[in-house]
Image 1 (cartoon, rainbow, N blue to C red):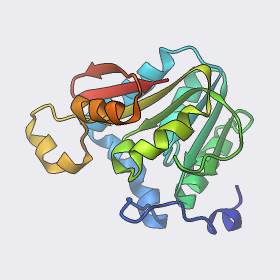
Image 2 (cartoon, rainbow, N blue to C red):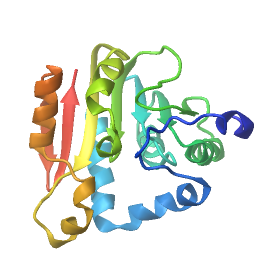
Image 3 (cartoon, rainbow, N blue to C red):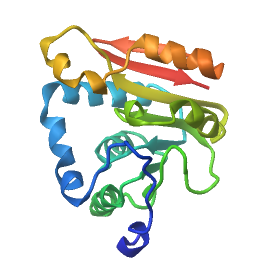
Amino acid sequence: MADDETVKYDLYLPGEERFGAISSKFYGIVRAVPTLRRFYSFVENTVLSRNFENLLDIGSGPGITLLDIAKRHQGSFMGIDPSPHMVRIASRKTAKLGMADRVRFSVGSSRNIPGNEKFDLIYTSLSFHHWKDREQSIDPIVERLKPSGRFMIFEVTDDGSFNRRFVMSHLMSRRDFEILGSKTGREMEFIEDSGFICCILS
C-alpha cells in the first residue's frame, strides 16, 4: 500500500497503544530481549505445527514474525496493523526478501479486516491485551475463518519471575481467557509453555 494511502486511516480506539513513525522504526529491537525471543519462537513453532494454506496475522507490526513463518512454510500470508508506519516497514521488508507474491501487509485491525478472504488460521501475538473491544472482536474474526479454521491468541502470562512485575499490564492469564470464553460462549483450547499461552478458538 502506498504511503499516501495509509496515512488517511485511524483505526485505533481511545486508549489503545499507538505506534508512530519513530516507535515503529525501533519496535523490532524488543525482540533482542531473551524472553521475547523465546516467546516469538513459541508463536512461530505453534503456528507451524498446524496445517494451513493461508494465514492472517492481526497486529503484525513490522512483519518480522509473519515473514519468519512464511520463510518456513509455503502458502499465502496477510498481515494487518492499524499503524500505517508499521505497514510500510513490513511491506518494504517483504519486497527486499522477494516474497511480495505471497505475503502482503495492509492497514487494518481486529475491527476492520480488509477484503473478504477467509483463512485457515488467524493469529495475533502480544497484541490482544491492548484491545479495548475484545469480546466484540471475537465473532467478526471467527467469521473470517474457513469452516475448519482456528483463531490463535498468543500472550505472555505471569510466571512469578521478577521481570514480570514491571509489565503486569501487558500480561494475560488463562483465567482471563476463560472469563472471555464464558462471556462470548466460545469453547477454548490452550497451549501453555514456560510463561507463554496460546488460546485457540474456532
